[in-house]
Amino acid sequence: MAQSIDSFLHRDLRATAVSARCVFVDDWEPIDGGVIEIDREGRIADRHDRTHEAEYDLGSVALLPGLVNAHTHLEFSDIREPIAPGPPFPDWIRRLVQWRREHGWAKGDALHAGWNESACCGTTLLGEISTGGDVTPHDPMGAVIFREVIGFLPEQKDAALQAARQFLDDEIAEPGATTISRKGLSPHAPYSVHPELFNALVDLAAEHAAPVAVHLAETREELQFLRDADGPLADLLRHFGVFRDDAFNGGLRPLAYLEKLAKLEKVLVVHGNYLGPEEIDFLATRPQFSVVYCPRTHRFFEHESHPWRELLERGINVALGTDGRGSNPDLSIWNEMLLLRSRHPELEAATLADLVTRGGAVALGCDDQQGRLSVGKRACWTEVALDDACDAKVTLDSVISAGRRVTGSAVDGFRIASLFGGVDG
Ligand SMILES: [Zn+2]
Image 1 (cartoon, rainbow, N blue to C red):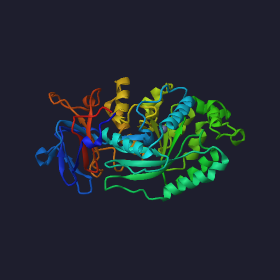
Image 2: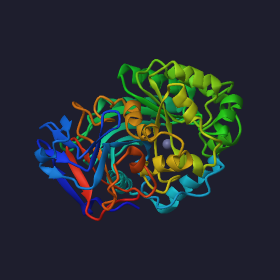
Image 3: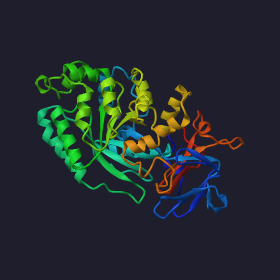
Image 4: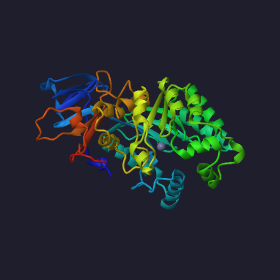
C-alpha cells in the first residue's frame, strides 16, 4: 500500500528552475546536473546543465517524464488484496460482485484512495474508467476519464446511451490549475455491451471527438462468446439476468469491433491479450489505435503470452496499465514496467520507459502535453531515487532497474515528494 499523500511535501515550482542529479530530456538524452526551467503556466521553458541557475535542487534523483497509467478502475481501490484466484475469468467476475455485496461500498472513499495512491506512485497522467459519481481527480494529476457503459439487453440501450451523452455534455470540475482532463467513453466489452448499443456509442463518441477505451480480446471465453453466442460468459450474463438467447447471434471476432471503432480519433484496446494476426494486421495501418497491456493483471489471470513486442515491431502504439486492485496488488505503473524489465533484460531501457511515458500519453491523446521532458510540454516529471554513494555516470539502464524507488513527481510544475524516501507501491 502506498504512503498517504498527507506525508508528501507539496510545492508550487512554477516560474522557477529546478535541478537534479540527472534529467532525461527529449528522447531519453541524459543531462548530468540537468536543470528544468518552468514558466508561469507550468510548462517547460528550457532545459540545460547550468546548475548555478537552479533555485531548487531536487537532489540525488533521476528526473523522467511523468509516468502514465493508461488503464485503471479507481473505484476498486478499497480492495486490499487481489480477489484470487484469477482464472477462470467469469468466476472471478462473480467473486468480485460477491465481494462488493459483502463489503459494502463507500465509492467516494475508494476513488479518493485510488487518486491518492496513484499520485504517491509517481503517476502524472491516468486513463480512468468511471461508472459515475465523483470523477474529479485530486491534484496534482492529469486524467482522461472514460465513462463505462454496460447493457446487453435491447431494452437497456436508450438509458445507457442517455447516461453516456449526459456524461459527455456535463462539465468536469477541475480543482486548481493542475489537471488536464479529457472525457471519453468506455463501452465495457463485447460480452457486456450489445452490438447495437456499441455502434450507437461509437457514433456518439465520433460526434464529440471523444476517445474510446474498450476491453477487447481479453479472454478466450470472450472469443468463444463472440463466435458462438454461448459459453461461460453467456452463462455469467444469464446468471445476472442480463442475457437472452435471441439478443445475439454470434459469428463475430474482435476484428469486427476494431472495424467499427476505426472511424474514431483515439481508441484504446484494453488488454488485447488474444489479438490474432488479422487484428494485428488491421491495427498496424491505423495509428488512431493503441493497445494497453496490463502485465501484472495478465499474469494474475494466467493468460497466454501477450503479443506486445510484436505490436511494437509492427509500429502499433503500446501503453501499460495497472487495471484495478481487484486483479493487482497496487496502482504503481513503475512496478508494471519493472516486471517487464525483469522478464526482458535484453530489451533497451528506452523501449520499456516509452511504454509508461510517451506510449501512455499517445494512447490518451495527451502527447502534446506529456510523455517527454521537452521545451513547450507541461512540466510533468517523475523522480526516481539514485544511490548517493555511487559516482558512476547515470544511465537510463541504471535508473530502470529492480529496487529503484519513485520518490516524487510534478504535474504542471506542482511537485509532490515523499518525506520518507520513496514508495514501492
Ligand atoms: Zn479494466
